[in-house]
Length: 201
Image 1 (spheres, rainbow, N blue to C red):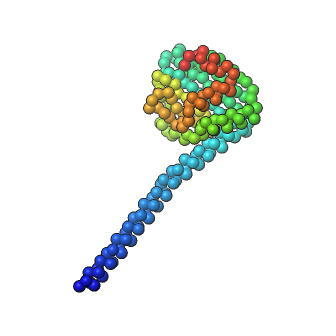
Image 2: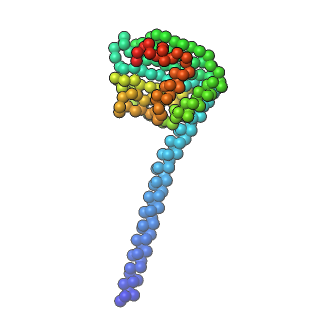
Image 3: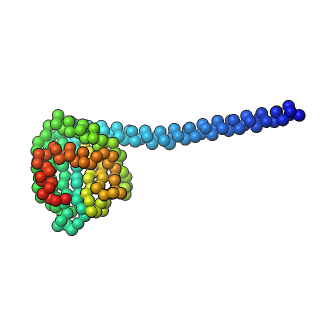
């Protein structure tokens, strides 16, 4: 009788062990497929952004655009700093049609540009991942504060654009210190802080 009971328990135990191994294997496979692919795509996206940022070809540029509060057209202010291997330009604007208020245009050189983009990379500019669709639409975002947009460019077109704002709940895609990045851009233009202060964002 005992032998009969043992002969029945053994196959059941074996089946349960096989099922447990199959479930564990399925869970492991799921983790590899879904979680590793996501982390790999994030890493590869960061690598692409980093390469684009650190490229010093003549058609490359980095830009910071800062938009003030959403107010009447007459009171709206914004400014933009664009750095290329051959130029550095700060432009301040009034109104939503970007009427130019002031501009400083200076020359640049490849070693200076290289140092600058490496400083941006070390400040984690390339760490963020650009949002898509409506999540990347900054219209109406942070109506009572400021919106900062950082763009890596090639031949006048955006390769990657990351943004953030001073409003809680509108963090955007930038995964770095906006104060640090803003200071780096402004330091490329002597007297930039005085000119920006004039438009009273």
